[in-house]
Length: 340
Ligand code: DAH
Image (tube, rainbow, N blue to C red):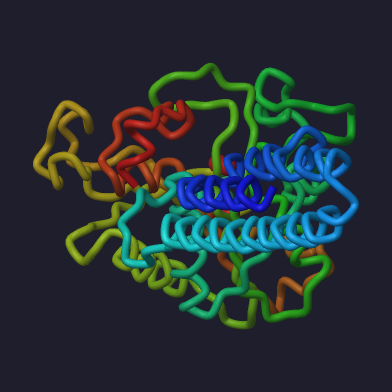
């Protein structure tokens, strides 16, 4: 019996050396300590021994069983520790490793242009004001001194929600809101979307962007308007850009003017895109605020004067970046967008 036990132990010891993973260890446990395992078989065979031999054999088998149990447990711990070590090594993070950065987006060109314009005017001491895209006929036309038969009022030019409410066709309604709601003196710009019932072509879109400017104070003159425009155009486009003033008519300014700038493509020499004039398409309309408009907002037009202008943000972007088609700004073609 003693020989048998020694043999079983010797076998176990050589097998456990080979057991390098948890599965093999578990198999060994079953083979030696399981119901049909070697140790269990030895225990069963005690019954066949004589009375005298039984205690000694029992003791040896128990010792062997404990030895095997302990060895299995130790091997188990050792294998687990090794696994953990390997895992930690494999998952080490190299903080210097290179990886592709996620692509982040950016503002659309038109919004970049609007922010640039706002910041130029802010630096000149203007407040930046925001207003609604859906406005009233009163603010958009009536208070701005637009005659009832003005063509802009027709449904073929303007999108109406009902008889009194419409999508603003210009940002000039913001003049009325600010004059009615704010204290004098006023020095504000307000940029945003405007809507017109226009067919889409290279220079027109039913939705585009304007920036409105309004200054109301005592002794505001045309000279202030010109100085403001010239400072702004030079800030936006550089010193080489020239301005051209043309007389015009708007119901809400008197006198009124329109402004063009040097053609950005030929720099004033004359080219097909400017019809050989050397000047861009008109960038803005403006003038001295009509006294009736001041009075409509409860401002004493004997004491106060003002200037106002509204510029096409899309056209500013087209001049700035030399674009020949307004649709580029809205097509969402990545090849275009990624250039900015
Ligand atoms: N609202 C005009 C337009 O959309 C532009 C304009 C002209 C704005 C004269 C003004 C102004 O503030 O004084 O065509």
